[in-house]
Image (cartoon, rainbow, N blue to C red; front, side):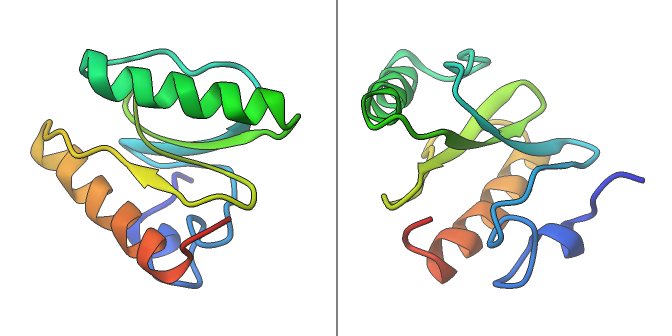
Amino acid sequence: MPATYKDIQKNTGALAKRETFTGNSLRAEWTTMRPEAGRLSEAEFQTLQLDWLDAVDAALPMYVVYSYVTPIAWAIKGKSAYCVTEKFSATTTRGQSAVRQWIDYTLTV
């Protein structure tokens, strides 16, 4: 059964626990592979690439939250989480709100 917003939100949800999950439009995973750009702007994708290179240099996986195929947030263990500022669909905006709550609760992973 897909994860719901209740399953992933707040300080007790899958985002705060940095758990891998799959929902209807959101999913999250730990990865050592560079995420694809999806619908990110060039500037946001460059931020993602630089953070991914930091993770590679530190030999750490990156926790990436996707809305459909677009990475909308990510974090490296021990560093601050990042949520993109771009706006996409209403569904993605809802996902970004959940991510921002996670970032508010846990400034680092």
